[in-house]
Length: 410
Image (cartoon, rainbow, N blue to C red; front, side, top):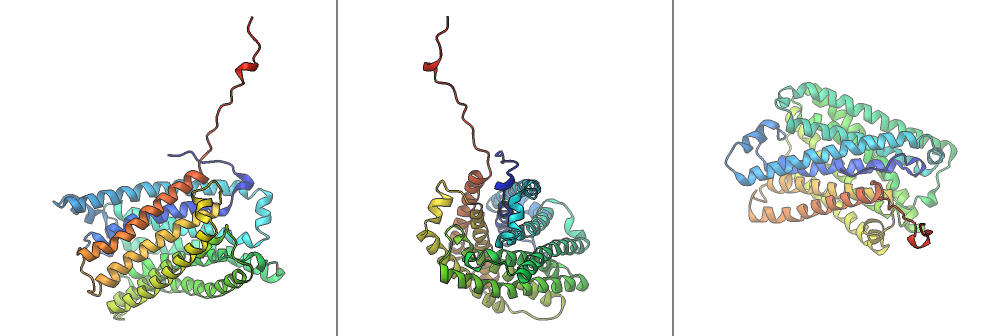
């Protein structure tokens, strides 16, 4: 494991939480293989028991897939926890600095939303690890769903408190610098609310207890609808400033923040439709899911292309990813890769396979998976590169005096 920098003080930024968020998202990329490519009859997701049945079987290809995916989940979950603990500790040091007080009186106060965003991801990671590695967990899962709702409720309250404090300050004082809002960094708040909303939707979709499902359903809609309303406002304001002043180079990566927002919101809406289907008698046809996912994928592709062209023209990748320039905001590159990959899996399996337009395990099926696997590998490489560049301690070279300047002995 690499050694992390410590006590950054004024050099710290709440955006460092995105490093832990990215590692948590990477956990989900490996979970997707188990979710959609392994059998788990009668269960909404794979469990320890379903994976053990595969490992004890006689299908070496499936066994290899399971072993690699489980290793990926556990290693990246450990990385997520390590980076989360590091960020919490560094944030406590940062709160004592003058830089923190300046942040709390500027547009950048929205960066604090990265904290509840990451904590919501931690709950998701914990649920995945529990399902995959704790024997018999699914037999008591109905007792865990209320606890999950409570946990997301606490994180949601924390996110709402940060955002309301920020918005009430700028609405009362009017000290919001629109000229420096020439990016989509304010969309971080929407991402956080969407992550909380998709967390609630898991209990709504997977619980078989109508009361539990209904509570998760309503709370998920509360945060998803809030995110939708705020997204409309922040998107217009951000593009208004970008069209007038041009996008800020270092913040151009925020053009891609729409991609994970689309993924978490879209998956939440799909899960809520499943809750209505399974628990409340509303029949949902597969073609309806395909229509929803097609719209979401289309918007993601639009912003993926737009963001790439803009960042490439401004030299963002050559400077902040492959070059020597450092920007903590470049951690925002990881989530779009994860989000595009995850929604791609939903599109292929729920949309195309679910409607019968694509046969699972066919040549066309694996052909469509190839770009997703490439995207996963590229995202993981970028994540580890940024971790090494921005988080690790720089090696110090011991300086030796010039021997030619030493006085002769004797």
